[in-house]
Image (cartoon, rainbow, N blue to C red; front, top):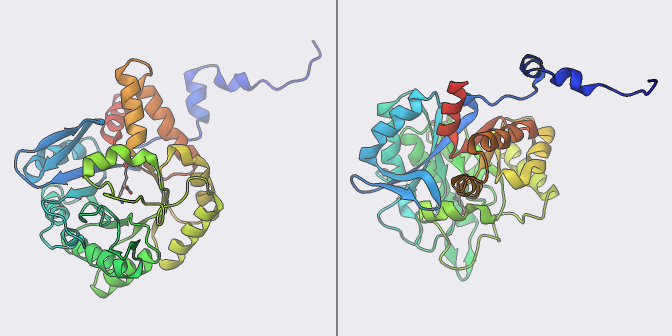
Length: 325
Ligand code: PBG
């Protein structure tokens, strides 16, 4: 036979060869696990659209944190559900707010576990928007001051990293300046640099009680149809002093993850959001997909696209699966 062709299958013929040439690996150190903390006692509410994910009151945290640490997960990101909400989200920057209290407690239980504080107002405002509202608008600049105050109070409570998700313009600059002036120049900012106005956040809004009560988030979060705009957003955050960039959601935005990684020289996080989790859980519960295999494939795809860090509700499951191997 004088056909000329390449034998790609030579390098696929057994597991050892496949292991040898594998380009991307998922590691437990890549993962960050989101936690929803809520006021009250003995609260362990499973989110109906997110099976296996719970709102936890502070007294439930010890057991949860010990499990996370035992699994080798290095970081959690905190979302808070406050007792009271108001127009200006004051629960976000109260020194005894739910996120601040949870942070102090977690640092006591597990001092080495990275506590990342999500910095936003939407869980704390009665209207559910990520900034303050006046005369029919979500105002940009007046929101910056509140976001900086939130970040400072989170750092004061012991947060190891600040993750601002509000999508106001200039939030990284405002938060960096606020942290530096308050003496927290060593606290890094992982900026939700590229955050789309996505329907994939639906289950999260059930979990965090953070749905906007009117309008939508399209005047501050990005249009899913835009790619080049993502690079402009990322550029601003780099210039303003972000330490780590994030793209969110992940699954429908692999091209954005890839481009941001190629273009900017900062570590990159991908947020595997609530809707991505809910879809797989639902399909798996119906026996339509193999949950473990599909999750590993999805998250490995995010790494292949360029993510260094993955925030995922599957973190505990993945950590268990990786240990089994
Ligand atoms: C707050 C915030 C949201 C998410 C993370 N931080 C919701 C939103 O912007 O409406 C979504 C996370 C997820 O869906 O898992 N601004």
